[in-house]
Length: 266
Image 1 (spheres, one colour):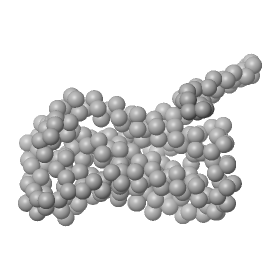
Image 2 (cartoon, one colour; image 1 turned 90 degrees about the horizontal axis):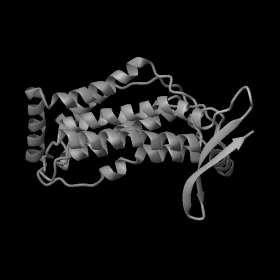
Image 3 (spheres, one colour; image 1 turned 45 degrees about the horizontal axis):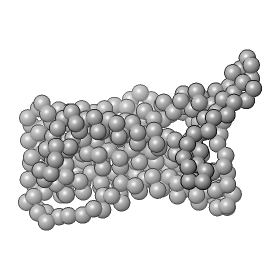
């Protein structure tokens, strides 16, 4: 198990972000909930990451892709799977289902107690939904295309690891919202995501390259969402500077019915 943890940490440690000390003052819970849930900012803070920050997730995806063409990479999958079978033949847990959601719970929990992230509830939730949507489409299409058998032989949907990818969607989501507050938040989020990947291998649900690629797709999906969303939001809440006419599309939930509301100011 130490070999697997070391291998994952070596690859995933490529990701880094600038941090500053948390100086956010705590506010009353009631005021925070009211402000956070009922108020949406006029603009959303865009992702200001440099281009090089996209290299680590692309490299992770590239490593996973190489396992289909480079025999030493694929043999390393078999080697680690053999080590798991030899050292932990009866290992079985579903703890990854809890680690998977830890970063997301932290984002909303921190906001609830008054430690504000970059975005308010509406934008934050839209960003998370967009990130998960990008990942879900990419993950499903890739699984169907690659048709890789899982280590346990259950099906041919092994590549990439969906659980691991979603865990890293959440980890990067937490990092985007709180990396400017404290490095502790980023460390916790990514540690939780790495643990998810390790459990997926020890449960014999995925190969090592599946987990690495899933991590890359998850991180990249969230980064892409933070780049796309400001433009999408500005389109949906557009104001014409010449006429003063504005339009807004917002999610709606009333009497158990979900939908979209459209408003135009003339």
